[in-house]
Image (cartoon, rainbow over all chains, first blue to last red):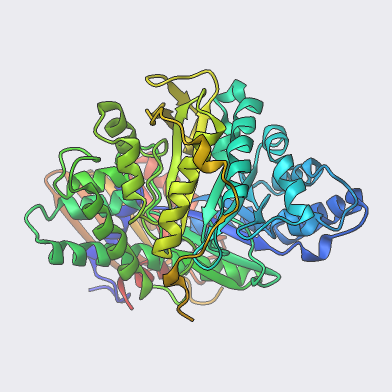
Length: 456
Length: 92
């Protein structure tokens, strides 16, 4: 009936998705190469970094806000990712990389973004001198900055698992927790350990601008668990073939919104459009929960038997639906299961249905890994390393991305709650195994790459 | 920008003068109503207008604000969105 080809009920569907089901574009992330910012003088290098970011991203926030208004769809975050800092800072004559983190933080503040990712290093086969310095700077860097996020890739299906690096990360996570102890160890919420890290992920805290990326790029992260949940709830009697089809159609529409936003942003900023990350990213808002989708499929509580199968089906259907909707899909793409950022997951943990071990099983079929999980502050560095090793093994063997973002909350124990605020939410401290893994992780060296990776 | 069309959606409790209030604002700013569809479900009024704002002298955001303010004055919730978002989401 309209001259526009879209029917009335389709217009109403879009409006309902945005107003009642929390559909939003989670992030427009500008990737910026800092490879030309290196300098033997660290002060000069930091100045180069600050100047380049503030120049490239000067209008990122205003362009994002304009698109938000024009299409009536919220764009929750505007963010920046940069070349792994270990590579940029390595040429500088200094042992302390904290000033580089501060340069990132200052630049992020100047252009008005809430997070900047890329205080990062790739160490799956070993550490260069720059990597070592960066790792040692992490606890101070995360304590002394607000917006900087750090990610370290310690394993891949082609290289195996660097257990020496994982040992180091256990200690660094503990130090970071201590350095930010006055804020429930929030520094650890900005630190991710990866296996098979994607180099074009727009989501924090794991975003960085990979070495095969162009000078600058626009990547878009979509969201929309609430929309998928409502679609699932409308089909209580559908079998799984039908349900997968419902999820695919919904994911398609969400992704199209992201595709439009990405292409318009790319044109307005005169920066190439990279990828859309098709992730269902929950927020602490009621209804904006991946856990609610799983329960909508017929589970009494997330974490009970059937949860892994439900998540596997959801993750796959989201990807299938989104892939046709976009010319370029990348990043993490799937369903995120962060505990603290998802009201349904928090509830399932509090009820005791969702345990640490079940979460680990779920990470074998979700898009990332053990995410935003708070554990007792007295957990040893070795136990944290062993948790990381397990998660990296799942990623390495299954040739998928896995990650650990775990927070040993200083001074808190099982039953307490950590409060991070904002999108990071709050988390009950989860019970973990008390038996030691010290002798295992202290063996060190590298776990060799698995046989199935030699497929080229 | 050439040929800019927007969808204006109006939601709220039915009352006298909804269409007249909104269309007056649009006419005042040279925005051409191309099509209108409305339904009333129980007491709940929904109207969708396709509006060509190509020749409006106002910036998109300013026009959007004036329409929303007019909606507020009669207790209606109004959205103004470029039509591209609907085409993108519902058409391949």
